[in-house]
Image (cartoon, rainbow, N blue to C red):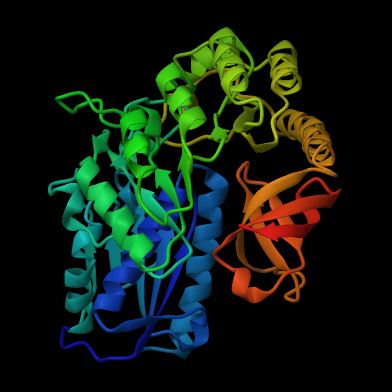
Length: 446
């Protein structure tokens, strides 16, 4: 243990994707090793960490608003230390711009040097402020503390970075090129998590389907899934995100044959128009995408497919948008994350001609959401009267006297049951369904 004062409180707030949440967990774990205790009470915090996102302008605006709130908090609590980390900080020139806007921040650090956060914290504890943002990763992927132990569910990084360079996306510029972790390190981390009580892991990567492409001898994502599926006492395995262009038959077959692999594919389509897909640099066509969906349903009729969709991309005509709606009606997603396109400085799409007017984007988004909400409701209503395996996660947020958990297809279910069932698999018969939540009763424990 370091010479930092014991018992200090740290509040960590994450914005953005699961990778950002996982980075926030890493930072929390680093501070725990330095004697801090995790807390959710900002007013009593000794250290606040914001792990940021820059995928959309709206995310940056929320973060800047939160930084403004923290300024007021620091005025009331001068000993408070504030750290800003993550993708927003990693953008070229961002630190200089942000430091001028928020000179009261103590630590600025990016995505490539999370492992040395304790060193930055030591410097600040001794007085002064520090900004350290590496332009590229320099050390091995195992130099950073692993996931926080003792939780029922855990996110596990299997790779970092992205090589796809979609024209709207800033991620490859702030997280670097793809790097895969060694399989033995991933498997050992999961075993350690299981020993601490974890029963479900989600394997994370910007594109998990390209995991291991640099390995020799050959070892790919499907191989990793087969090995993780053999870990004793682990109940469920999920993964995110799958790029359609790299979704192989081998991977789909592996999920179909696995015991603990959840039959849930998050497969972003982004647009149903080949013209827009090409402008997005997605490297697949709608026809190829639909062939992947067909293969999934051929081997896994019970599978759930979720997606991401962007409306109002530069140059999107009404016909292009209608083709996206057509895809939604062909695939019947159980859930979709829908977004209006917004410019990101440093991306090709930000400089494209034929930017779409805001009112048009809003209209298209509302229509898309209406279609998807109806499809989500139909999906769940079809589940009424059937029984599904659910991992009991804990008390329901809206009714603590009931339990909640998710099916293998990632649908949220609420049901009666004793708290001692938390962490176990139960069979739940579905009695009612809304667009987002299922209501049921336990038939028997597994």
